[in-house]
Image (cartoon, rainbow, N blue to C red; front, side, top):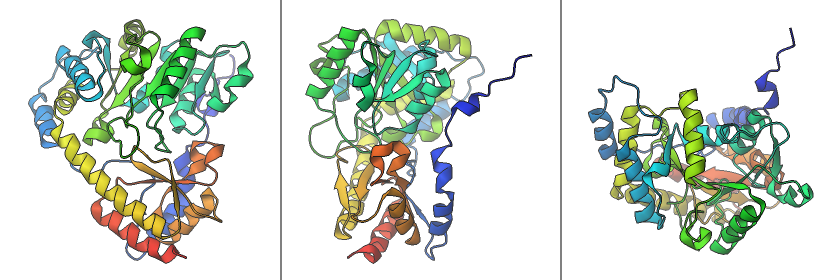
Length: 372
């Protein structure tokens, strides 16, 4: 019998496990830890969503992998209403949270050994993880020119970006789409922070007509309700774009049983149909962002990019990423080192402003000890 090849052996150490010693230091603070290392929602699930979930709770049968027509219509309406993007509801496919989709997309598209998948230089680690799961080769975007005549099987883009909050402008996105079409390459755009813009140019979907000229050929856009609607615990997202690619994903997901539970589908539809709760939540995040940013800058930190999303991309003279993590942990504040997202993050940390108002205020007060 051939020796079993362990899939886990392809994977790097889960980054956040390396934060354990610093988490212990931060937790020892007399006033408790302020955990800004992960962008997990802490505010209540909107009432309109909870009502929809409860109303759909009697769901004894198997749900549709493609999602209900009502959910797909809600997603299409939201994209047009909020982002000027028109899609056929048939080209909407629910996902069990967008991390699941990011991790499995290369595999679902049939990519594997011998294929190269490009991801941003500073990137959410799951892009790399999903490429490795498929057995393909991950390549940061700055190495793209080294490919020569080789064509990647897939290119990931992320705007607004995690961790930096950078927004790719329309000109940049158009160039990516034009290049990919010349090469016959699929572009997958992770757009889970699209609603959370703060300053500068408003983010555009890769499916916006100003970017793609009205054709969604070879394009996929990935959307989440975790950030907009506090539904991280529901695992509720969707992908849309090229109808042929969506149909291909649907065919594979049917075989694999990758199905969003029926009550969650109903809840996701209610969330996408209601803009009021999203606007209220964005206002909460905006206030927390301002409080944390003001305290950081007063304490001598520099904020780069951070035009959108739920994080501040911060640095302080004289400290590398891990030095900054250690210094903040001594004040009871836990953040993520920029190197979690790639070598170019070696001098930055990512700070989420998804903590409660009380914890953000506590962090701002503690930053005073680092001033000067």
